[in-house]
Length: 44
Image (cartoon, rainbow, N blue to C red; front, side, top):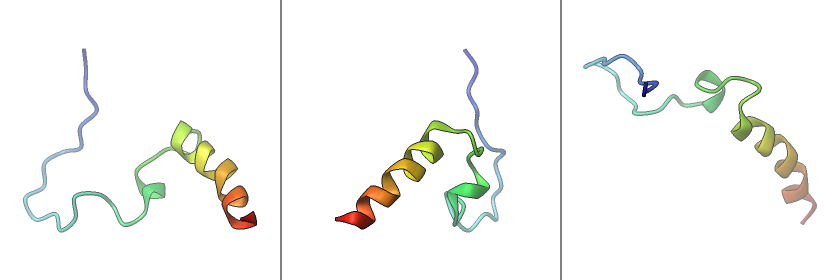
């Protein structure tokens, strides 16, 4: 079973990128879910 790890960088300042757009593909389930739920959240 393979894992999808980022390369080790000892001078990296942050654990995750400031924006998930830099890390996730546009068709990733998390991105699609966020796009659907954000308008609903603003209606409340």
